[in-house]
Image (cartoon, rainbow, N blue to C red; front, top):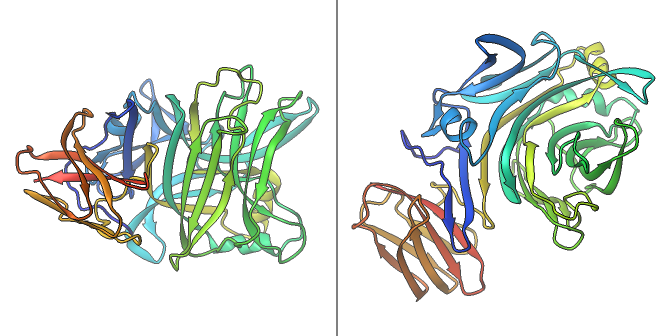
Length: 404
C-alpha cells in the first residue's frame, strides 16, 4: 500500500492562496488507530450508520474530517436494516494481512421502497457520506478499489446491469426544488460473458420520485474492469454548465497504465438552476444496487464485496502530489522531504516561480525565473507547509512539505 512518511502531524486545513481558493487535504490508508464502529446517536447505538475514528499518519478521522467545518460531516450509511444484511468493516486485506482496507459486503437486500406508487421493491446500500459541506465547486479524490473475484458470477449471467453504483454526487439534494446527481457505476451489457465497464451519468429527477432523466450519459468500453486486483480511481468534479462543467474519472491499473475512462464537459448542476451553489453531499465510496442483483449473488453463494484503500480527498485546481513522490515522469523532482534547511529541485522545463505558504495561506518564500535550484527554508519553524511550482507553460505542481 502507498504510505506517507508522516507521524503525529495533523495537516488538514483551510488554505487560501492567490484568489482565496479554499484548500483542503485529507488522506488515510485505514491504518494506524483507524477503527470502524457503529454510530452512536444520543448515547444509543444506531445500526443504520457507522463511523470511523482514530488517526492514520497524522490525519484524524474526527478532528480533520468529521468535525471539520470546511468539510461537513463524515459517516457510513446503510439506510435501513442491520449489519447482518449489509456491513462495512476495516479488515486485513485478503492475501495481505499486513495491510488494512475498508470492506463493503452486502449479503441480503435491506431497504424496501415503492416505485410508481404501486410496486414494492428492495435494494441494498453501503456508502461513505460526506454531507453538509460548504458548497464545494471543485474537488478531487483518489482511492484504490478491489472488486471481489466473485463478481465473475455476474459476468456469467445473461442479464444487463446498469444499477451498481460506486460513487455519487449531489448538486441539489433529492428533496430540493431542482435535484441533480452525478453517479459512477459498474455496467454490463446483456449476454453471458459480457465484461464490466465504467459508466457515468448526470441526471435530473423525473415526475415520479423514482424516475431520473439523463442530461448526459457515458460508458467507457475500451477497458474491461478487472476483478481480483487493485486499481486506482481518481475523480475530479467541477461545477458548471454545458460549457464549463467537467467530470472526469481516471483509472490506473495494476501495471501502472493510465486509462481515461470518463471525461465529460457538460452540466454538473441542474440545467434550470440559475444560481448553482456547489456540491453539498457526495459519496466517494459506495456500493448500491437492486435487490434482484443482491439475491442472485446470494443464490450462487457469491460475495457482493468491494474493498477500498488509500482514500485521498482535496480541493484545489491543481494536482497535489504525495510527500513520498520525489520524481515525476515529466522530468521534475525535489528532495528531501521532510526538509531541515534546503529544498533542492530539478526540472526539464523552465519554472516561472516557486512559492511556499503556511497553513494560513500566507506566502513566506518566493523565487522566480529558474529551472533548477534550491530554496533556503532554514528560517521556517518546524511544521507543515505547501510549495507551489508554476511552470512557464502555466502548469502547476503543489506539494506538501514537512519542515523538521
